[in-house]
Length: 256
Image (cartoon, rainbow, N blue to C red; front, side, top):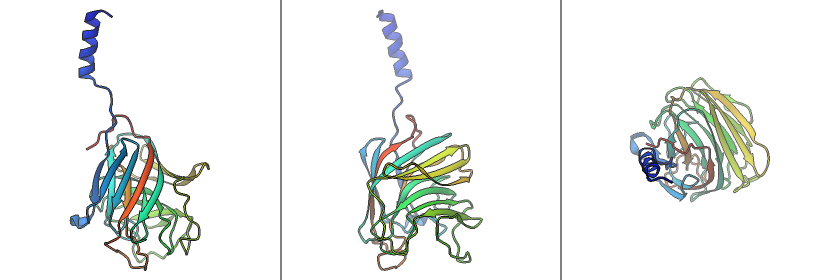
């Protein structure tokens, strides 16, 4: 190749380097920072992560989130999926983990998430939940009649769809490591899916929600929704989740 072409290619490469996958940024989401620090371990860059986290829960029964969140900002439509290899809680408390999209890191802000619960907790629980906070500080307030099951439920501030409700969670466990979660964004419409083993994707629900043009998208875990003894909010509960085969993040994600 002529020398002048090599020089042009070298200049072009310096000005426009190859796109590199940006790593996820991690935070502990909680009001006033009153949460024991978690940890994010990069097992395989851009694909496999271990999240260790504390905190009561994201959404549902409180208007302020608590837990671990590893994220990147993504502009435009996306189709993201991840395999949950394992969920462990030291206190056998009710743990939820999965994919989340947030408007900001403020614990009361709008968000949505597709989660799977752990097998270790023995009380009543849903196996899979697609939740969304549609108003600032929204939650399932006490005035709302209790309802569990496969249908959508909630109020004007917070709603969810759930599958696999059991009065005794240990009766039918999730088939880890063969559990998959997926979130698809088209404009301001978000659709969630779950999958077990080699089955087809199961559509959980869909919602139209404006989370901004470049929302925070990533992985989350909350560790102490209920303890093994039924006590809500066990601060000693620590959850560790192994997220594997993360796909759908653009090669040049703008991580902040």
